[in-house]
Amino acid sequence: MINETYLRGIKLLDSGQEIEKPRAWIRATSLNVIREMSRKPKKEQLWDSNLIQHQIAVEASNSLDSANYDDKDLRLLELALKKLEPKDYKLIVLREIEGLSWKQVVNHLASQGEYITEASARQRGKRALKRLRKIFFELKPHHQ
Image 1 (cartoon, rainbow, N blue to C red):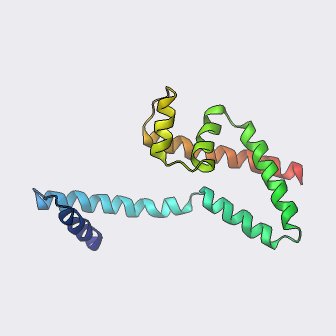
Image 2: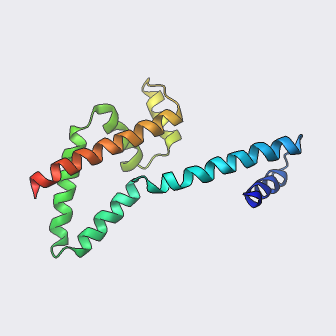
């Protein structure tokens, strides 16, 4: 933690900025580092799209008929996407399929008259992925 705070200070100074109140800056930065470190394990436990893709790839490689398996899962995923609410669908398509950053997603939504913060978009995206997973795994036993 101290090393990370020190490195951030060096980076800040190298960028040409000045630290006016070093003690206050160190205290605030250290607190931020602690917060980030405490959130890291939680983030690692969450299912993100990379983990889902990896898990599907591993299962597919273990399957004797992997091409057929992928086709079935893709069809199920498409079905699950169609069952989502339009707002959830739009967020997932922008973020996961088109590969936009959260900032780009927020800007895109703003251009269509929907104003939300980046934090709200992230939270909505996380919930949308959770709903998508739920729908996908509810459909899966029925289509095997």
